[in-house]
Length: 213
Image (cartoon, rainbow, N blue to C red; front, side):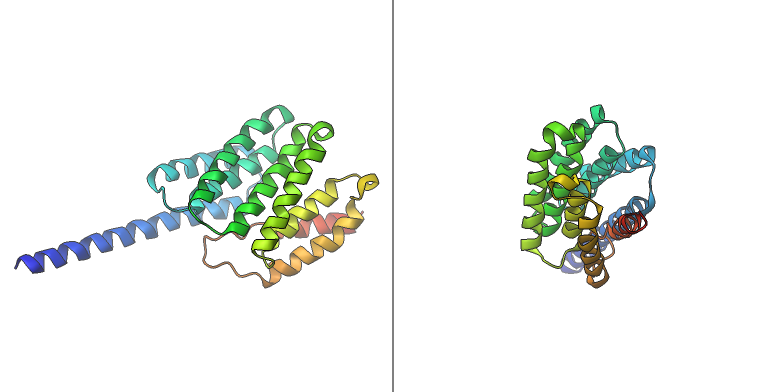
């Protein structure tokens, strides 16, 4: 009798944990769907706050701090220079937290590269060389960890696109890298529905912009 009760208890705990995990994944997926399409800073702030609350509930899933950081980077990209540093610092804290949970190194490095690329906008003339190099170094680390990850190619294209022509950048030089990124996106298959997959639409929009000028 006691053995039967014990087995029932273990089974109940297993089903409860499975249900909780499934519910958390659904919550993550719903917010990723917003991140895939949103262009509103107000909405991004709301999503970032929701991911932060989720990180207090689940401290083991690296994707929660990853997407919290990704949300704050996107908020920074829509912010005026005086606000960028604060958002980037919050993002950096969450990337570091995600990194500690032994995730996909390539995705983490790509997010660092994206972060420092956006942080340049605090003061491009002063920070461009230092943070531009830091972003490029993380792109290289991301590609070394996984050459098939399309996001490092996109971040590299960003860096080239926003670098003045006199320093080896510009739209024309960004085009082949954007095309390479899009080919990688075409071949890339996320491991599950909540794994990182962002960037393809952005790459296509930027390429279209380059080709139409």
